[in-house]
Image (cartoon, rainbow, N blue to C red):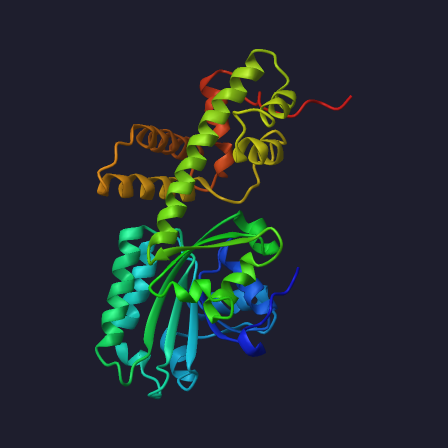
Length: 348
């Protein structure tokens, strides 16, 4: 695992990590491996935080609350909180904890350089709610600009799954209240994002104002769903027609119908029948629903997205929330009376 530069000037950052699931855990490991001072908070209590700390190692330490972490680091000029939780609802609840007691943001005032509280949210969130959360924090911070930290909310949606997180090759789609923290290679925010996107093959895209990252991620995953559904129908058709699916994919991959899904998910996760990408059906459904809601809010004509969500909802009800999203091909196979037909050829 390659280790990115610790931070500007070689100084480790003080980071609180919240959300240590399939994606959050490798994100946190990357941050700790880079040499930053990492604390962990779990909304499920200290026992869960202690377990997560043991899983991560590398000096990551649990804390009992966000308040205790902020108070313990009161004299540190810039603090960083990274979240990777299921939905924007949980992010909003965390924001309410801080807004409900804004004294948590108090820090020694430095006239020439106001102390900062940077929140990097890696949740696949709903863009309008992301904007509302950021504004709520800004108002709480601005209510006393002399004694409270300035809050900077950055939405950093990621693509590439748990394997990409472990390798540091995620694509980060980033919006921020202060876009300069994304563009500046030496900023603490950019240094942290580089922990999981800075290895060769990773990408960081600064997309503009807060909410932009979550907007692009939701639309990206709506495209993923549509590609996966159409690809499943195409491959089941070819399998039932007696065509070697592997050979067909090789041909399509050099033709106009090629897609990232056909080039990656199908040979690696579907033809092998492993269905082990690590992104579940509930996550796909949430992102497609977010995209559709965003489109409706903007008055977009969206029949394809409506159909994609309907079919994903159908797969969710049949396969369950924890099924890997690549298992959606099973629904097409079963409805086509051809279970298990999309698979690699047998070795001679």
